[in-house]
Image (cartoon, rainbow, N blue to C red; front, top):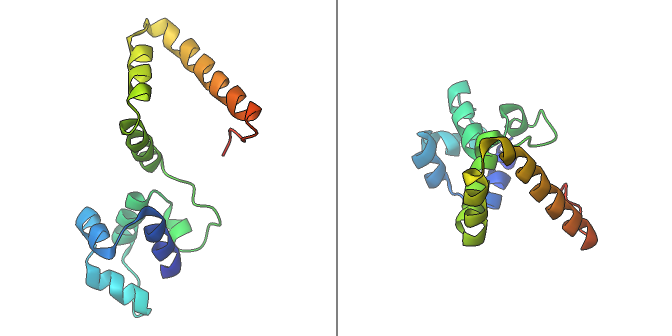
Length: 126
């Protein structure tokens, strides 16, 4: 179970210190978990799983896929957007469109991107 936590932290470039600062779960609790001496309490596991963007079941090894939480997906999307000013401008243009047209514009953009990715030999569902 700790191995899953450790892998998620590695993938996200996180240390126990960063997890502690973000969640309030002490580094000593994480260390005891690593040693196999104890498990974090439910509330601590919830904070850790929310921060990492996975379910508690995934973190405990009970669920084979990470099922990323919406909060984590949103954080990742914002991080990606902040690196690409053209995407930010595009989002602003969509938001400035009349409310009754936004869904149509969004669908068209999504379909265009999916079609382009397929033409490039990339699975748009990845």
